[in-house]
Amino acid sequence: MPVDEERLTRLRRYEDREAELAEEFLARRIGPWRSFVLLTTPLRESRAFGWVICPSLGTEHGNLRRLETLIARSLARSGFPVVRIRPDLTPTRGASGEIDLSARMAEVEEAVTLLREEYGLDAVGLAGMLFGATVAAVTAEHLGARAIALVEPILRGKRYLRETVRRQAVAELMALDEADSGADDASAHQPSSQAFDEFAAAGQIWIRGLRLTQEEYERIAEIDLLEQPLQFRESSLLIDISPYGAISSSATRLRDRLLDLGGTVHVAALDDPLPAPFGEYYYRNVGAVRMDTRLELDQRIASVMTAWAVDTFDEYPRRVAS
Amino acid sequence: MNQFPIFVDAGKGHVAAMLTVPEAEPRGLVVSLAGTGRVNVIGSTLCAHLSRRVAERGLASVRLDYSGVGDSPGHVSSWTPSDVGEAVCQARAVLAESMEILGVTRFAVVGTCYGTRVALSLVPDRQCVGAVCLALPILDYGGFSRVTRKVGQRKAFSALRSNPLVRRLTNPLRSSVRARRPAAPVVAAFDCLERSRITFLYGQDPWEDHYDRQVQDVLDRLLAALPPERRGRFELRMLPWGPLTTFDILSPADKEAVLEVVVPLVCATFEEVGCLPAAVGAA
Image (cartoon, rainbow over all chains, first blue to last red; front, top):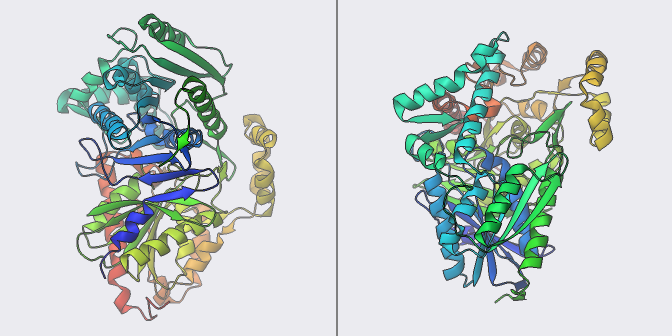
């Protein structure tokens, strides 16, 4: 019996009548590795302003997928069509996925083109978390974005790489610790230095299951939102998260940089105890129960972003969707 | 192979799923069920890897994000392996839709951690030919723990219970009052061994894959009660790689090694169907 392709096509899309939105995996795939595209649209009244959510690079993207979903649905309920990019990690190139900035940037560009050309939207904004936010900031001017909404953006690629490798080292250390509880301080630094030795020898390292090539490492390391030439002069939202709700120095510096460029900037400081760092695995075991420590924060981020978008872009009123 | 992302109506909402279909007509369907860990792609990294491997062997597969996870809408604030009812409904909906699309009549299940409980809940289905469970939590907590778990979903109690000092004081009490017994889906799945092959995989000590001496004792007792021909269709294998619950961050070599074990086991469940007595495929 042949596969029922007509039914498969129908199931790519569903309508959530209560939330007044539809979600659809588009048939079109984007970027060099043919990532999937997930489009969330208002069911009734839609604005001529769409959003692309830029995925972060490493394993954090998996931990941010739920937040992306909440943001997409929240924006769509307020009339904004939203595209999410879903890298296909089905391993066609070896045993794992990759940390691939070049691919992510190409996907964002194609997603923007898709919203403009296939959905006829006048204006597009870019949103992102962590390095996804960095990608949004770096590509916004080139892609003619009207706005960027950045959640905890990484200002410097080098810092991102350092943190990523450090977390790899911690993961390896935990593994070592399970095998031999007598690990000392000296061995704590061993895994990351081993990783860099491997980098030098093979031109690639493995960061928590994902491959990072020397070429991509250097490309990421070059990025510095405070130093590199940016020309973005449109509207920006910076969402900064800390246990006390104070605006961090990095958010202040980026705000100043964006203001210097001539744009308008709104900073939203959210307080959250962050039991796990933002972008990390957010479940905590309490007895036999695995508690989600991030749900409330994710919902707040989605609400803040949507409220700002609605306030800022009221010149793009809702119109009955065709 | 071809991949088809879909949304399936699971009754209380839609769930996102990915159906992977081999080039030739599929000879069966593998349902991959993730744990509540990292969800880099729909399902999990293991599910994604598995989908390609089994497609190369003529099997279709489907993986899903449970409601409230990844691309599936919904809000779930806590998870526990002893309460998989909603996830089982979602998996059943995805399974039914996939089988109709593909026109296949047999399926096997593969699960990791929380997903193994969902997987074993599908084994009593007459069309299920077997299960491969990675890091299955075999035991359930007793009544006292169920009560504290319900109360524990309240914020204040949760904060108190996660306090290290409180935990240190109450741990001796907890271990003495919580009765641990094999979970109902495990017992029910063992009843299906006459027509299905079931394998449990764990990372060897020191990996924390829900396996310890107490689990071993309970499992031994369960197996001892089975007739030999049924016992012969069960296998417990300890693997030198782990923890299996964190497959996604294993080294490429370890991932490959785990897959080299899992894929043949999954395929074997389909190959043995013809030899088994019950009319597999009958509704």
